Length: 285
Image (cartoon, rainbow, N blue to C red):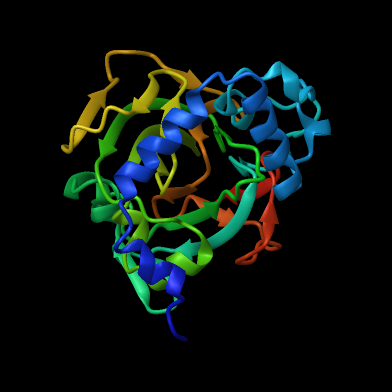
């Protein structure tokens, strides 16, 4: 299968400049211009504003306020499954990790070590484990929730490229999710009578102005060009299953990692299938 022209063009686009420009526009409080932009976006992508906690477009001062809008309390009921889907989106890929290799798309693999920013010790804990990758399109709800209860241990901001993360680009750019800028969140989660590590990675993309977590706020910008690492072992930061943990300011992808023998995926899941936050993702093994 040939690579689309749109993918080839991304190698030449000024990714950082476009992203910074998009971020400024998204943060701007432009009054009637901002409202017109939001209305056009809603029409273009078919956004369901009836699900929003506040469906009135005029109530959003900036595009970012609209894009990260909260939903009604009853819009995403939580399944009683052991692991619930953390986002709205489409399943990119999921399944076993082959040694340290994660399947991206036909012909493309990338390593857990590359994904988490080069930490071999952390990556080793997911050898022969399991992964899931979910793509968030522009129309989706863009807050990210915890698939299970957990205690925060670490956050790593890894600099990188800013390619699009849509399915066509995933098929055309090797190592995409370990190549783009990303925020790696490391948790301890309960499993049987102990705890195991769990990683949730927020992957940046072209015009993704920033990524934020609930404990830190906006992580990027700044973009200093080097890995930044925060440790939380001396803090007791805990999350319940389904609790919000972060958000994208413009859309992207999440990648999750589990050790071997922790999750049994929902048998109804399939690549390209649509999912919603709170739906059953899998059960504990």
